[in-house]
Amino acid sequence: MSKYLGIDSSTQSITGLLIDTENNTIVAEESINFDERFKAAYGVENGVFDLGNGAVHSAPLMWAEALDLLLQTLKDQGHDLSEIDAIAGSGQQHGTVYLNNTAAPALQNISSAFPLKDQLAGIFSRDTTPIWMDTSTSAQCAEIEDSVGGQDKLLELTGNTAFERFSGPQIRKFYQTEPDAYNNTAYIGLVSSYIASLLAGKLVGVDPGDGSGTNMMDIAAREWSPIALDATAPDLTDKLLPIAPAGQAIGTISHYFMGRYGFTKDCLVLPFSGDNPSSLIGLGLVTPGQVALSLGTSDTLFACMDQPRTSKTGEGAVFASPDGEHYMALTCYLNGSLAREAVRDIYHFDWASFAEALRITVPGNNSGLMLPYFSPEIVPKVSEPSVVRQNLNEADAKANIRAVIEAQALSSSIHARWMGVDISSLYVTGGASANAEILRVYADVHNCPVHRFETANSAALGAALRAAHGHQSATGNAVSWQETVAPFTEPVAGSTIKPDKDAVAVYREMITEYEALEKAHTVAN
Ligand code: ADP
Ligand code: XUL
Image (tube, protein in one colour):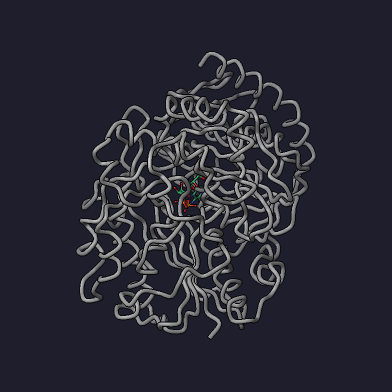
């Protein structure tokens, strides 16, 4: 057999990626886009609801429906799901799912005769999930930091300063604004542990990778921190299950999925992790010092580290790696793909003409600069949308296209400094990594080669590799992480983009200008 399934429940889609470790091949890769399939039923746009005042939520019942549709699609394509030995997965990080006390029995007694959505609609104590794009919890961040004894204390304890999108501040806001619904909540999970719970047919805990994105986990112990829990909301020890070690199966697949899709009773389910920690594995970053870039809904730049190096400036986050050994440093931008799409749509371009505009414009953009905050930004912190142009004519479509990409690449260089790593190559993933002209700008700004991979779905691939590693360990055939990832994480031959020395020189000058503009603007905010 030796088939393993990775599932990534992301902001705009859910992806399933099936690998065969005997032949070292990806045998299936399928995504269900939430807007395409569920916009009419759930009213989402780009997978989310914008509720105003910085609140951005999504629909956990939609994710359950999408999981059914994904597995049905794989089955209809002729894949024999009985051959799968283990499943692992990942979710968009930080989003919290609130369930009432009917959830545990509902998951256990579920019938394979009816879809998940018809049987699970009653299990939520809150119908929507605040997700990572939510910036509405500044007050709660300050309260949590104060309560634990200050920002430095929270940083020391959990590895991170308080971030608006992290789970703890979101839980605190729910407790403060909807106390009855909070009291009616028996279990709080993350997107990752919620999908894993559906598969296992029982409530399961959050792994250390996603636990570190909550402001509530003791980063050294990889357990919930009682001090941070107390600072967040009451009764959290009861509402959160213990942290689940990422490498150990949480059980076997529920009878629902056996009856409906043909999985066998021996198919193991491993804890799900965050999408970024999972991408760390899917890009083969199991050795300290390697750096990757994910151009998805969010843009993230991340590195594998020996120790949890923290960011005092609030520019970055640190998460535990699902390899159980290392850590990852991460800088996350809210204005990733949606900012690129905003510029593309304003000027009525498509991705092909967008790439062509990049190809025919010059590095440095004749000094034209843009701060691309089409929505609030995480790094640097900007609370209201504001697009700033300097020496840039708003009517010049091609120059604006170059400006948004140069801004994102320059910012990724400035806000990677806190990681203290020498970026000598970049591994890229995410939807926009299909666009070679975008990657060329990153190669020139970072002055290093950029490598592309067979799949842009590195989170789902990382999950499939985690499933393989976990299953092999559980069956007495443990292999090292390096051996597990190596056959699947070779860059595509001939795909490497090398820096151009003239462009590198232009960007070396331009970064100072950009940084000055960014500072001037964000101080004013
Ligand atoms: P997520 O996993 O966060 O939902 P993905 O990594 O799947 O997101 O990326 C989806 C995004 O990829 C789309 O929103 C789209 O903007 C972007 N994308 C797809 N193709 C291209 C392209 N050729 N050039 C630039 N961006 C692209
Ligand atoms: C990371 C972050 C996003 C989400 C969605 O901290 O908020 O990258 O994980 O991909």
